[in-house]
Length: 547
Figure 1 (cartoon, rainbow, N blue to C red):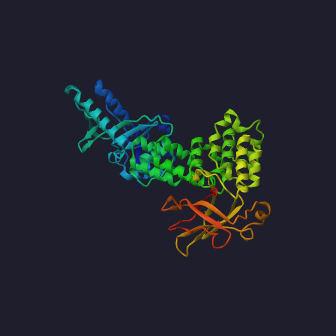
Figure 2: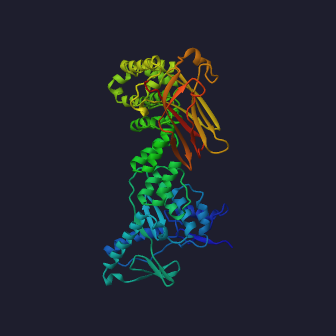
Figure 3: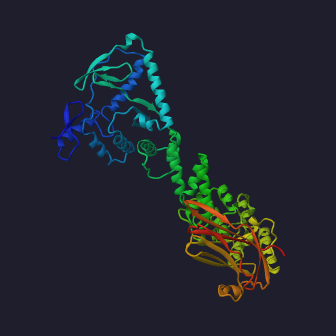
């Protein structure tokens, strides 16, 4: 036998849950809704809307007692079909409905102890769970205390009980603003008004934060500023830490800039360090090829360029990244990153030298952070001349130092190794990796290889002779080649890899060694790193001290 429930105020009945064939019940529901009558819906327990309105009237009555009220009439509370109603609500995408479904499943359709009024909605809460939020717990205590204070201020003559007929049974209006029956006392839910003016907090984030108090394994659509801001406002420390952890683990080219802004806004040092660490490793390899590069702030880009750990395959790639970033600052309507030739043409069409103009001078620190003396490839140097970015004095110094180093056997004026060393990077994703690089007429083979079957890797470099097969034919015919018997090299090998979910750096430190042409003296010392995961980012920094 199917159970029915009352719909509206006309003693009409509807099957619960509604079925497609219950045309009479559906018609009665629609008619009651058009008439403005409160119909029991799955996202509100029986009489909760009436309860809140009655509570507000009661608070006004406590301050200014009116004449005795007329008999009360209300809809019958939900019966055994409540759990079925909860399941039906799952089909709704409304944040309030989603929260109601989860909370009612946890509390098994228990009546609420409090109702949060926020963002234009009502959220039914229960004491064992709302106390997890320091903000809601404090609000609940203050509201309860205020209610009790108003009750105590009433005189004895104003505290007469009024017996009424409700739902077929006798009930009485209690002095605490609730109702009581002979079977036990039922306390009306406390109204908790919470004004939220923060633009980042949405109904979806508030719904998730409240759901997380009832069920710890709840997940939002995305971990973002709205969730972190809501957890901060409600003072939910566990949710806040979980949000930070999830945001750190989801840093990518599409989120790093926004997450760094959020970390600075809410002073979250761990998230800020993680974003800056990601940029040090992937600014060149990932972000520089995406339109999201435009969201990078000037200060953060400069800080990354000045960091000695920044990874790049060569110095030119950092120069190219700066050009792309500046282009995107002046062309904010771009939806995709244009081709390299388009960006180069943009700077070539400039009416004057970019860094000599007042607007361009603000970007000068970015170019000063680059190791321009390390750009030695012919096509790259021609591009530096072609774009109208550098003043003549900058190009003169860079090219003069290059000519001096070539003619003096590679000598460089070294005063600060980390600022003057030329960097060459490679990504190790397999058991072996090699790369040939050249600097001022000297060529080296950079090597990385796994040690046996272990997780250790060995890193080294070897000076190449002009007849070595590892040296490309183009290098022997079109590039300068030094036949100097010995060359003192100051170098450093840095390896960055992910260990136990955290990126770590291990470095050989600054080493000095004389490289000769014979097999005995052409190889460097082997730098071994244990417990290395792949992929690993390996950086060789080279400098030639004057001899």
